[in-house]
Structures are given as C-alpha cells and as structure tokens.
Image (cartoon, rainbow, N blue to C red; front, side):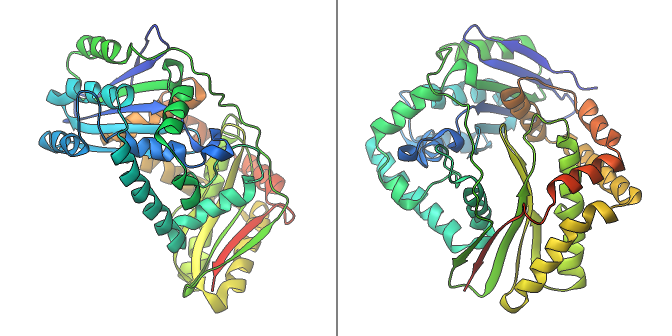
Length: 410
C-alpha cells in the first residue's frame, strides 16, 4: 500500500509527498481551484488565458523565451491544463531538479507579471486554439455538448476556452482581479511524486516557496447548475463527416455510485471492446473513432459517447447508440462486468510507473474531494460493484426522455 506524506502550511496550502524510489523521474504538480465553471459571463475564457500567461514572465524570470530555455536546459517536461473545476501546472524532471521545480512553479504562480505585450500575443494564440476546436469536431464537439446541457446556468463557461469574442475583451486588469479572487492557500494543492530522497528538505522548501500565498480567496466555487430543457442541437459545418455526441446527465462526483458510473461508461464506450465501439466501428464499419465523454463534477455529471460517421449513415448510427443505452440494463451480463473491472484494474496497475499518474491521482482528489485515499482502496470499490447496481444505475438514467444529442454536419 502506497503511503502519502500529507502536510498543511499555515496559509492552508496542502502538500503531499509520494515517494517512488524505484523510479528515476519526479513530477511536481500544483492544483488550483480555478476553473471555467466559476466564471461569470463577462469572464468567459479567463481561467484558460490565465493558465497560458503563467509562463510569460515573472519578477525573477523576465521573459517567456528565458523561461522556455530554462526548462529545456533541465531536460524537463512541463505543461498546464484548465478544466471546469481546476487548473494544474506540472513539471516532470529528475531527482536532482526537485528543488528547482518546486521553486519554479511557486514563482510563476505567485510572481507572474503578465506583460501587456505578451498578453496581446497570447490572446491571439488562444483565439487560434479556439478556432482549431471549432474547425475540428473531433476535438471541439464535446465542449459544445457540455455547453448545450449546462449553458443556461447563470454562471460558468462550459466550453472552457470561451469564444474568440469572449477572449478578445480580456484585459490585464481583469485577469489580475480574477486571479486575486481565486488564487489562495486554501484553494491549492502541491504534489511531489517520484524518487524523492530527503523528504524533510522537500517539505521545508515547499513550505518556504508556497507559504507566501494568502490563505483565503473571495471567489466562490459553489455553482448552481441548470440543465437545459432542449434535447437536440444541430450544428451546420462544412465537413465531410457527421459527428455526434450522445449522452445523458447522471450523478455528481460525491455520489457513492461514482464507481458504478465509471464501469458503465467503460462498458458502453470506454475501450476497443466496448459495446458501441464494437457496434459502430467493428460490426458496422461506420466510424473510425468512437470514444467516451463522461465526467463527474462537484454538482453534476454526465456520461456519453462521441463518434464521426458517414453523413448518410448518421441516423443508423444514432439508432444503434440509443438502443444500446436503453437496452443496457436488460442485456448486461456478469462476465461483461468482470471483463471491464479487469480492464480498469490492469490499466491502473500499468500506470503505477508514471509519476504523473500519482500526482494526478492524489492532487485532484485532495483538491476536489478534500481527502486522499489509497489506490488499493479505490480499486477495491470497483471490485465490489455488483451487477444489480449496474442494472439499477442504467435503468434509472438511460431513459429515452433524458438523452441529449449534439450533431455537427454539413
């Protein structure tokens, strides 16, 4: 059983050390409770832009080019990502660079200067990213689907990046004010996972580097989510295929049935032996890609599937999809459930050699669930899910009057 060394700074920052002495790499990752779900309508896209701007210069590290050179000189891998409920920044490197990585991440989060000239350029970069998603339904339609379901809520940018128009009005002042609302010790988790060596020194440095953040934030992360009444949306695009997202709202992440939800989603569309992959691609030859969409958020959740098919075969593909969901509770068998459990267990076990897996596993749960559980206990909960629970879940949520559909076609 992997033990996590948890500690909390005086300002509320929570730290976790995950010692993996058999590996050579180390991932330092910082999770922040900053996400598009918290944005007001005049702030859409700002969490995503804030993430981009973290690497554009600090008081100590003056330029974006200098930052990139510094990271590359360490042979490190770095990235950041914005979600609905959280943003994360990480560096994967080797043991000798741990202290550098901890200091680096604290610097870009605490001391970023957000130069006007860099912001102007980066808004152009983000605009092109948004256009890329709009031009490519394979990448962007899933966001359209979530926005279609929850876009009537008074708060929250459900496309995460917002529109080109939203982004065009973001100013340095607006971004700094937004950052000040949410960047705080209580909304922050720092994870160091990998070959650690002297954990006492790493803990001390984490305290020294992250102890300067304010404890509390003024921004509220509780969100009232409204489910839209419309059940179908068609987007006209100049494309050769028809792409669709088909799904249904289910449960929030705190629901005890979250393990049931993951298993059901995986059985229906989560791997190359799933039901819809088999029906749509293998048996019918209708699509190149078929993948699952589901997410469990704090206040809501959904499950679903996305695929791209021949325009003339769209109705047939949708009929196959709808029937698979509706009939699932009547047709699912014990051996199918066992096979998917084995898939999840095997996939998890293969991930154990990745420091990024551990930082993600620990960081997200501590930030959003306020607790860390062992991987063993997490997998045990999957093992305990019974066929009856699976059938009850499917029967409750997979109703014909509950499904949502978004289609992009010419």
